[in-house]
Length: 258
Image (tube, rainbow, N blue to C red; front, side, top):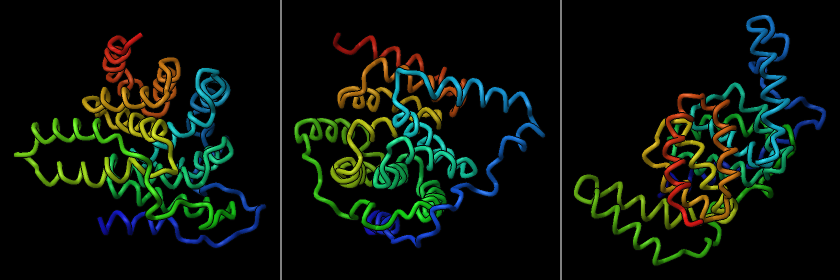
């Protein structure tokens, strides 16, 4: 728990302001000419299909597409593209406190080291945009209300399955994840589920998708929006990972009440 609070506190550090004219990009991020010099077809697909088509599809807002994409990059520790997409997320309406919460959330779902890599990139982006501590979430805010019955049912099922195998994991899943992390108010429950599903697909972890996709849809994600999430993920997580997840998503869609 101390490590958890320390990570959140680190995200809340005041960043030093830079000129608003500073270009918010990483020197390592490949520019148009760099891509053309290596893979001209890739640059054509990037401009025509990815940026010129996928990002403009009406089934999912640019804000949600940014949340999905940033989640993939963090989950896969792909830091080169992070400056561009962190800035795009902020331009698309994702608040700084929400970017901070996505990073914190994924420390648990994609690993501490991946989150720390994202912290280093986000710190520079925040500095370039004059984002200070007042725009970041509190380390220990007042939590959202807990659905005690649903959480008791989840905890009982997990305890029965794995309590004798890894009691520590079961304990922290209850105490830290579902009674703390998921109740942090600066990222809506729907968006936490969207982040989690995106990270699971990007990591090829299909077994956990039904629970979290259902949770996302219970929190307001529509089936049409979920479909577009997988379309976005095909480009950023890769076709094989998405096609591995599609049978799971199909089963979830078919079993949900009409």
